[in-house]
Length: 314
Image (tube, rainbow, N blue to C red; front, side, top):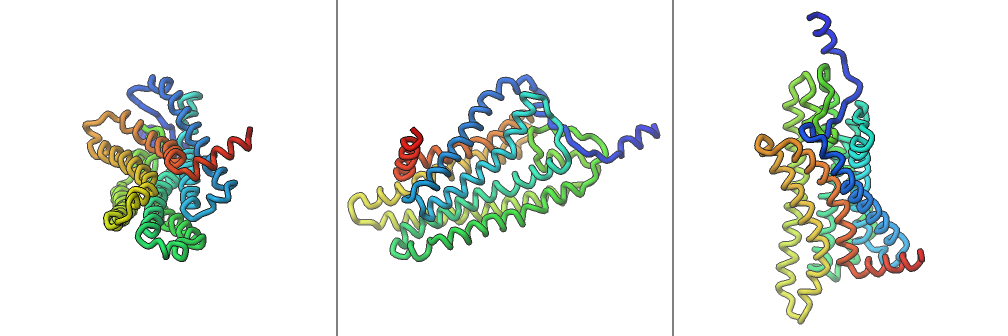
């Protein structure tokens, strides 16, 4: 008994990630579509970044913000999916203590960074439609730089306490995480300490950051819709709304997937654990794969730039 008690309080140095604890046979079937989605996300975002870099006509604030969104998508994807595929293909379940909390920090900070980027893009469209004459003086390259610094600094600073609080807990028992990723609550449940403060802070920070962004996005589009409805020139309303189409579709995708993840976690007692894990993985993969495709299809300038890039390559 004494030896068991002493061994149970030995500090752990690594965790083991167990994807789909109840249906581990899913891993072989899921590896192929996840791999294809990962390649699609990385290839599409890389193509978009190269196109914006090489095409002079795309050197505008709106496309710089889109480049920022693509870079956030790629980092988020690279942080999560390669480890998931390594578990599926090579059974590499172990992850070091520091790597786990680094992954946790990136996941918790880059998600609100994306929502904040959507908010700045909505403001860009608001100024373009509601104050077109002032657009060149308000939305400048300097504005994009300041907005980018704000996006990174705000979210990194306010989400940093989440992995810090989790890392400060004492882990003296099990080291098996029933998840494909180092999600905060999945890791915290393994600790020997009370993690109520951790849970409260994640809830408050998450809803404050994401909630404020979505409120500002909603207000921007409310003002845009009011302005468009006052347009009297034939076709002016349709033309104005077409410039917001891609942005609105991406926000719809982002918010819908996020809402599904949140609702299923709230009802976690009724939803199988494996479904929750799958949704968490897909939430880090589907938006990065869809974002560049939607903009590439909906935006003529980007479509033309990609065609020129392909012709140049051939």
